[in-house]
Image (cartoon, rainbow, N blue to C red; front, side, top):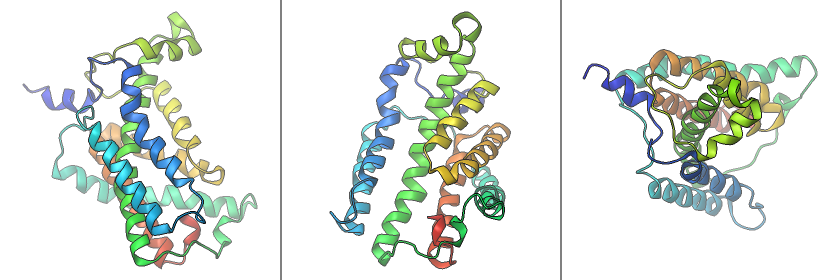
Length: 248
């Protein structure tokens, strides 16, 4: 009984389905959101685009809801996320100014940004602070990290590429602790970073490493989901009202 909370927070992948069967529940919301985000602004209005993303992605998450596990949620998790928020913002925003000082990018000097109506802004805010925070953490911190962790345990026997490729037909192994290893953290950080724009790579890598440290210390996926949402919320507000439109 005493070990139940730890196991609940660690074993977030269902053990009765292979990684191949679990691929769609974890990847589909991400793909739907990305595909809908690529619709040209000349085709539909911003409000409609954000509304479609909200409905389609929410419906997909709801459809696969029985697959997802988040572990237990405690008030302490929200408190930890709030305390860590300034650091998360610093590791995301700071590198932009550093790269600008080195002459490698001038993104922080950009003054133009997309104009949003109040409704468009609210819909995009919900998408970014709620949906993105949920499906990215599920995909990266649960599925991808679980994949790399289990593959890493087989590297000596199967080799680097063989261990990664052979995961599709395997069931997730029972976990007594979070799937954190050098191999899983580095591999997942690369995948997470690759999903961002080129000039965001450094920020994305530092942010993911910091929140992974929080994941290890707190033992809770909820901490990562909450701080992800709060970070996206703060970035949206800074972009809309703080003169930092280049952030969002």
